[in-house]
Image (tube, rainbow, N blue to C red; front, side):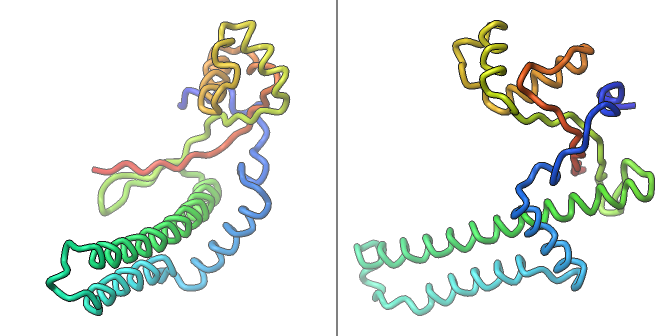
Amino acid sequence: MGKYDHVIKQLPPLPWRGNSEDYQHRVELAKADMMSAPGTTGVFQLLSGSLKLLATDASNNSVVASDIGGAAWLAETYKRLRRLRDDLETIRSSLDLRIEATSQMVVDHYEAENIEMLRLASGGSVTVYPEPYTGVEDRDKLREWAVANGYETQLTLPWQTVNSLAKERLLASEEPPPGVKVFLKNKVVLRQK
């Protein structure tokens, strides 16, 4: 039994699972790509290519050994590191998209199979549990509530604070702060051994 069990049944599902339509469309494309060729992901191919590019750049360095540590060597090193960083940012973006796609598929399969947690043969477990997830609908109402409840020095409450306040209030059987709408979002958790 989870701590939000008495609350979650009243909450509407999160529209587009909290994502914009465009992002959700990209997630759906990632799902289709992942399911069409399980075990082969473009992310790992991109990472492999980036590392090969870095190695190639290092071996084809036009700077002579006597210049190591000099301005030309540092400039070449800077260029390679920037290129690698850009590649890694691309990889991270792709990984984030595939993690979201996989999380959504995990939630769908767990719901279909009526399970909440799987222990992994490799160790650890993957659990899906519902939790409240907030979004500000009316900033003025939320601000009025924040000032009236001692949060005037913060004037703009970070999303994490609003989310935490809403969860605390729901646990106390109180309404979320005015101007806030609470949805149900399933969170996928990986625990390492």
